[in-house]
Image 1 (tube, chains in turn purple, cyan):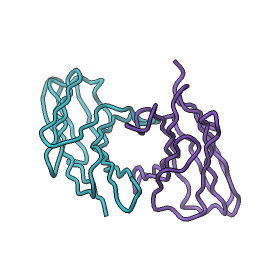
Image 2 (cartoon, chains in turn green, orange):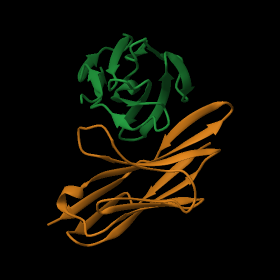
Image 3 (tube, helix red, strand yellow):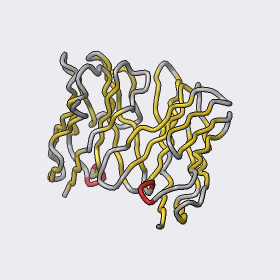
Image 4 (cartoon, helix red, strand yellow):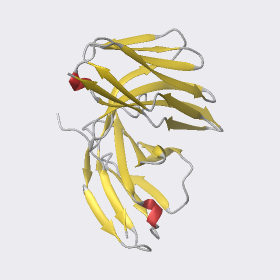
Length: 113
Length: 112
């Protein structure tokens, strides 16, 4: 059974650019959540999607957005990148959202220069 | 605002030396408390979910317990392969939204 797949694994962007990260959940899972992990702040919740609808969201600025497609794959977009956006971005999938953080991907390491 | 505090920040144990990790929390409308294990360079690996005070869950050498204010992860006779960062998180409900708040983790090192 394939796990949660995040692409790309590593990304370097310039301040002011935008970036799109992708997450393919485990087959059959309908809930996808996104997190930002930094050494200083730890894991912080960005948002959760369930059946193509944003169900929950954290306290991040509007530059951070996401969407989920009918096949449950999800994308996260960050516009007007800032140096402080450098982090490991993790996505997690769950069958029905009861334990939405059940399975995490390896993450995308974003570096903003 | 929901808060999760984990202690200690780091713990070094000899193989076979049992200990406990602490997770103190404040949350609006607890919808679950989660424990994860994270190895360097990898995403967190789910261990347990606890929903109500008095609940306990076990898996191999790990046992998680929950009270109204804190959770403990007990590690019995740890092995070097138990070395990892252990994360605690709570899912709370407020204003129609649910939000997950993580602690900053306890880095466990088990020495042979």
